[in-house]
Amino acid sequence: MSIDLNTAKQELLKLKEEYETRIDKIKDHIQNPQDDLNEHWEDQAIAYRQNDMRTNLMGEARQSLMYVENALSRIENGTYGECEVCGEHIEVQRLQALPYATLCMKHAE
Image 1: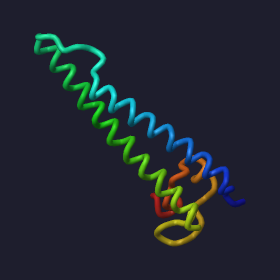
Image 2: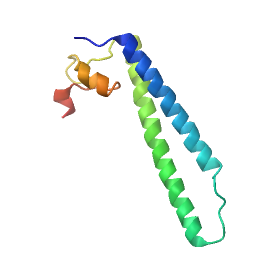
Image 3: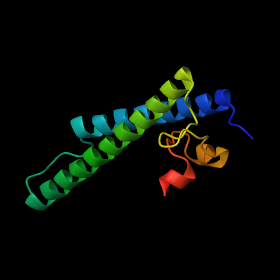
Image 4: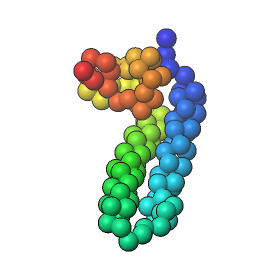
């Protein structure tokens, strides 16, 4: 059984939109905090910690977006579903679970 490239592309485009939306929301929360800082240092510490968490989440979302965009490029250039190490086909179940996978199960371990 082989992967349907149209289905894979649609799934990747949905993921791309999801990650772009997530990044935009996180940026908005960082730039426009929902709660005003008051003068208590405890509240400021909590706000700074939340900002750090948001920054980390944005980094993860950007990384995932890059994986998705690379997978879309592989669809366009005809290498989608090929293991980067051995060149063999990546298992369909793996691509269904992780559409931007670049390694077959053997090399992902």
